[in-house]
Image 1 (cartoon, rainbow, N blue to C red):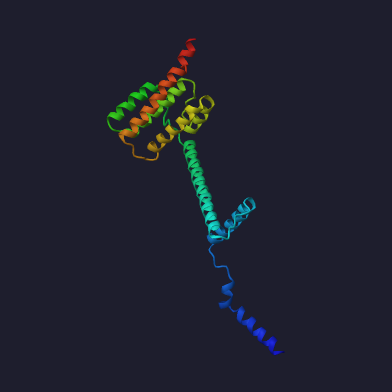
Image 2 (cartoon, rainbow, N blue to C red):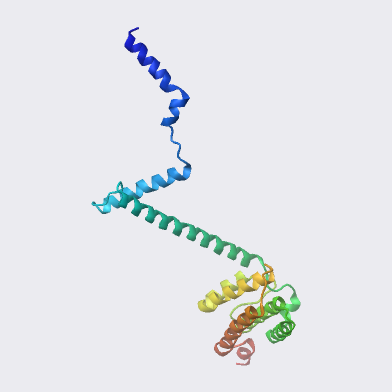
Length: 220
């Protein structure tokens, strides 16, 4: 074996050792690799659109970083929003606002009277419950939905969408507040309740002026 071949083999043996091979390994973290891949893809895309764009420069690299941060931020916000909407829909689909047939048999005026009484006693969680049940019952009275013991607020929301989309959107928010205070143990202040009561009463007045009740239709 020639001296050249012998030295070459020795060099290959040395370079194959672990302490030397480590320099050829990619020691970047997974996030670093993903970031570099996205930067490379975005850089090529921008260069194909803007021929003067050079991702290798300091300015070009800064532009890529800003764009990627904005895109990732928007994606994170979008995912969080989708998850929140999903969780809210699941909550609406599971819980029935009427817990007993007695509550369903009352008319909305009686629920309003009970809500006022609880509000005077500073029992705002119970006041909120009866205020919302009164709202459901006037919606039933005006043929905007059909109140039933087994139905959830999501069922009612779905019915309202067929009749009045604006009312349905406000109902959705009112139902979420009702469920957070009733089932989620969220603390409710007197100011919160007064605002909630005012919103519902405004809708009840508008509904009474716009839609006929079962009785009025029957008399005709």
